[in-house]
Length: 131
Length: 288
Image (tube, rainbow over all chains, first blue to last red; front, side, top):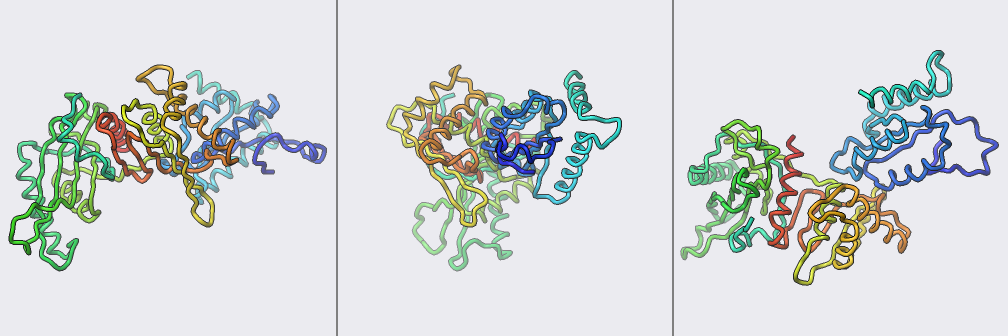
């Protein structure tokens, strides 16, 4: 399911299936996309931040067109205890790999992988901080 | 810090194309005249090969290479090096003044980051600015690359860097009436290219920057973000367009103007070194 911003319209709440993962997409060429994501984050229930949220930064191939500081995005990831993935959608190879990674994350969040839960992501993030 | 205004007046109000240059190997300031002769011969040879710029009247290119002692930031910086190409038409018998057709200069203003750990034989002049035909730039660049084993790359300026520039320059104190602060945005994903030009009264821009900047002389990313957000919010209030979703391609102030393709115009002598310092920094980060 794709949405340009949150919150999702409440009219369809009863028809909506369970949400296992929220991927926030930030286009490094658009400051607006970062602002939009920051505003949308406020509408997300705290429980999602236990591994069911991740940030996907696109457009990183074009360093000369960037309107957002990478530090700002990494800090966002830290503040919300969620992983930040970087990719370039214009390159097919990277597009495919990124899709595969997201699918893997989704499988874990949906509980399809025995022995691993979404909480693993949170503990992975904390360890690298303390190093 | 006092740059000779007369000598550097020629740098102002010209559109300079920017390049980053890796350190020059075995460049000797005492040999500038030799270099001019060698470069002149190289250009003549290139023309004979058929890569001539102009066909028809036999034209002679005169090359001058000189040192601009004052054009540097600190004592650690190398003084700037200027290359001038002039046309001397054989057709005119009276030796009228040679016509200047191309200008290029290497400089380093507070480029310590790069020059600090360099071995002895290297000269660090990371910023190269050119004005004139691309064909001449290409010939001069080739000769320098071959002779000093260096590498030239066009210096692109990202929207992030452009917003730093407009915030810094809009905040500069100027004695005379200043021209408007202008930002040009290019809107992506449209079938027809669309450019939006946003002009702000220079006093309003400076007033806004003064309320944002906390410590004079210091600028943080946060302050630049707040400054830009205010401009975006103001525009959105009036036109319902989110400029933050568009690409900032050009900024223009009374101090200087800059385009994302790496083209800069310096308009005010007072801030010449300040602008060059920023550009030197950009060149160095492109090299590293």
